[in-house]
Length: 321
Image (spheres, rainbow, N blue to C red):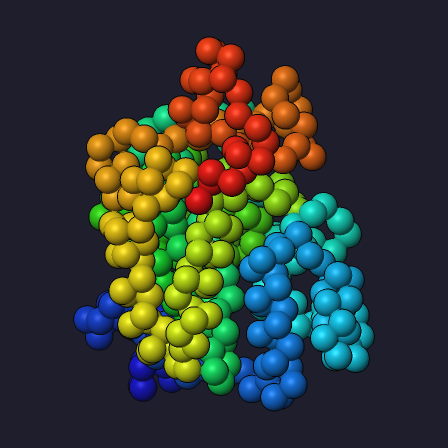
């Protein structure tokens, strides 16, 4: 922001002084990173697409996939590129991402929880978005009961500011949840981010490292937005991506039927308070074990169990979107 940058003011303070909204600043900040080579950009696209389909893939399987397509890549190179994307295989292992060493990690509060109303549990995550000449990061906040996307932001860096801006927007327009769940990424464990939640008196929950299904609804959202909008349209610039997602998310919330919601829309379920919900498995209690293919069930499915109407694991997992 011109002269304000020169005096070292934080982006939030610069925006307050200039009377502009932070989200616009994040979307238009110049990207100071080195542009990946043409080959690296191609590999990034392949890795991103494969990870979106199979988020349990780590670097070893990515190497196998890329070599099968004729790319003589080393595992070290694949690990570096997955690091650029902020990706890690979602099964437990020694190479899962680590939080900032000085940040507090909060316990996972959703285990065994029945989510039966809107604004009971929100969660957030960040995903990489490839562009024709570079890449961007997308953060979103989703309501677990209704699957409604409450807020989202784009940035060309992984700095914490755009995540805080997204959280403040969700709180401002949708009230506050009882529990807010994230992974252990440094953006979400930062003091600045958790302070916003503490100030709003929201309980903080964080996934266990490598737990593939602890934040499953956001992972399903990423699959939908990428395969239904980002990949087919092939956005070239951050501005084009912003305009496209500004159309897609209202469609996702208000027009797209969701199988797991009985083919209702998230907007309808969120406003009516009917037709959503889920029961999160207690992996250490009487519920399905950690390797079960059915760790989450809708509220309707759980009620059906009392009548002996148990669904198969395949049906339960398939009904999440």
